Length: 77
Image (cartoon, rainbow, N blue to C red):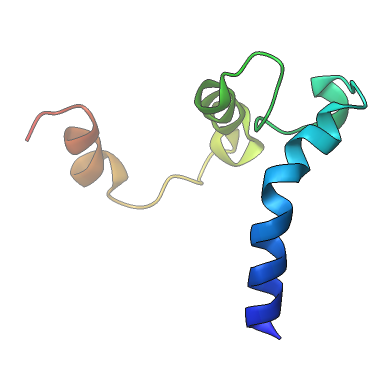
């Protein structure tokens, strides 16, 4: 069953985006960064992550994040 699904998806993938785009729906309706009208997939995902309520709620930062990971992210090892 999994192999059959894989084969079907491989055949469908090339047709999926053109099929959805033909209806000329706005980006706000689809709520997907993939295939948006601006083509800024990565920038859109980054903005969504920054604006996520998970990133704005106090106490969601794991213990020792700033001590161990922030130096790596800022290139200060």
